[in-house]
Image (cartoon, helix red, strand yellow):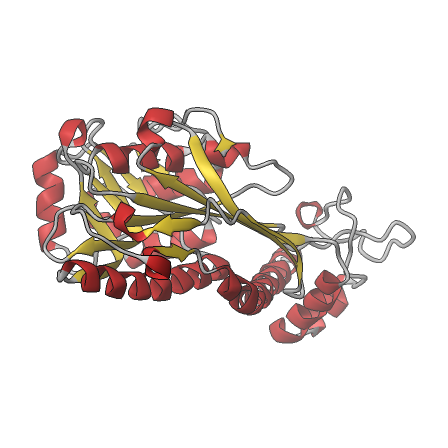
Length: 366
């Protein structure tokens, strides 16, 4: 069982934010701004990686309920009625999207087995806000994936995903908002939520351009794109960088990336009904480390923690015998599908880095 410190990520907006995140917050002055395409664009360009409390205004439960009712397109936000704050979520990475799709397919199989046992229909929900009760009454929390009985207020299974920080042991994730949110899912569902799957993806970013230690070829480049502390450089002058198309420069970066020792790490945690009484604890059921090529270097599975009794996910008591009683987290699909997602993610980052580097060089010459 993996233990993490109790959450210190509150909903009061006092967390440290970057200058780019402050620009994003200034752009959001009302609930209606959340549906502005500019806000969606800023979520990407600010490199937003963690949930961000919106501090510029407060929202009453009635206002948020009306917003949910009127909105043609619901943004990825939670509403905390205790603090009357909106929490905005970052865009998903390619690896996160791939994992959500894997679990979406897995929940389809789980839902069919639950339906057979109970003669009740179950529905999978993607990108949805679900209401909470008890002391969190009138709060609505966002999730990328959930499974619930059709017509029920609360879900049986919730999936949460977040991004870890490179060169850390994962503790910053454990002490973040997502772990406190998991406890609230359990407490605010009147016992309906039975399982929360927590996905942590930690991607080492592509190394940016830096000058060669044996050459002055890049000494004329803007200092803000030179990072001498890094261990990899592209070996290109600014003229060579500008002569490349974005795609060819991105391909050059990818080739350099493949030579590096950078890694992508995926960790899966599972929290069950005992979680509220043991705040900060979750079972670490799977870990995988991937090279930039997508090759799986190491993986570790906890067989006992990753197998679940089907009746434990149901509110009503049912009798199940034999192999039909248990099911497992889909580890085999991680090993098959994640390598492609990681390669696509590195390629997307390389294209972005190529484009922004060329723009910075051009601006430095004006």
